[in-house]
Length: 292
Image (cartoon, rainbow, N blue to C red; front, side, top):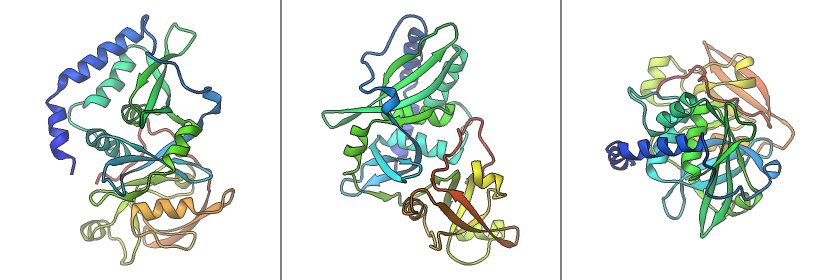
């Protein structure tokens, strides 16, 4: 549903060059056009869970998730950025670097590291973001004002941690979301899942029955032996038949308890338990993925 906007973006290389020039300036003497709206220590660390749609408007949102509580924090984004975040969640590479890949490369080439991104404020019904860069030879971090969508797409490509203010969390709680109708993907507990189609079921030799396909694994689930290509059958005794339902079932697990996961892999059914506050480790360098 975002293909027209994506093609238009690819015809605007000037935007990437302009942003690259701004980052070059930041590495020398420029600072953010605004200050961080909160004390960084008061921000809540979250992770990107999925891209979805606002229920009443159909506008794309990126759904952030607070591990432990499972609370959802939907943030409005544009269609082009939705595509960029979806590619990052799926671990998909492009033949040539697109805008956010380019900016990640520019940071590395300048000796800068994107350590944290913030969604720190809300002004005139618009979410505001910030990049926190560490630059070789400078003691203090450099803060760069950013749209949250760009900051989050960059975080997926650099391994930066993501933090939101409590003001943003309260505002986002009022946004109702629904899953994408096409190509949905979701991540929680270090497990990335996508729908299982008939073609995938046949190609991977998966058994019949409801569930979602594991396309990427990291953290405790990987340590327990789960691998991409597994069929996730249950979360806490409930069957996840879509990526969005998988997220909701993880969210509804009692705080402080382990999520009980049952999955099929290599002809056998396995059971593991994962702490409900488990965070997905940084995605860079990327771990094993099933390219879908």
